[in-house]
Image: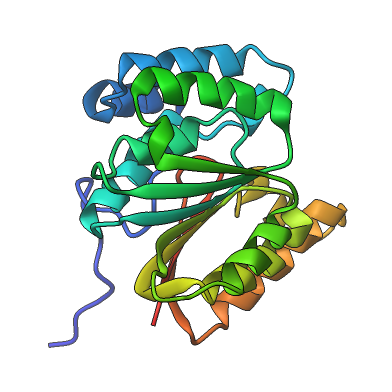
Length: 231
């Protein structure tokens, strides 16, 4: 007997579901466990002119879960902004865990410092003000007996590939690199869009897809999050 194509029932799906505003609210209501301090930071940042640069709360929670799942002790963050992602991960670290956090803005990171201190995790976060590649080079020149367990990249898009290559060498085998904004509000799929940041992310995504040094998955969470696991 030759069977025709399978027909998916209403309870099954062969692709990621579309998220309407109504469904997104349901997702948050039934999944998000955002501490009050993180909520205050998110709301303060949301009122700023560049507030859209902040990651979504469900992404922060997911990243914190990944920190726990892999038993991370050392994290490298490239791009701090006002510290929501740093705080989300720091709250998931054990007491002896540390984050090396890189940013170029004293203004934004001063907000981050305030919330880190209030959360009691400021001693776990070592802030480096200056170009992230300088910090990566500094770390690369030190004893690599303590590699990083996780790296989060969320900074200037045209340097993504440089940040990725530099941090991959600092990462332990089995460690994770998380890269934000890889879907870039859908612009990466618009082949007629030649904005420099869009082209940079599009090329970055292509190169990671072909990189046999990692296993990877691109997830439609927030503005798109790629998870790369070092082989």
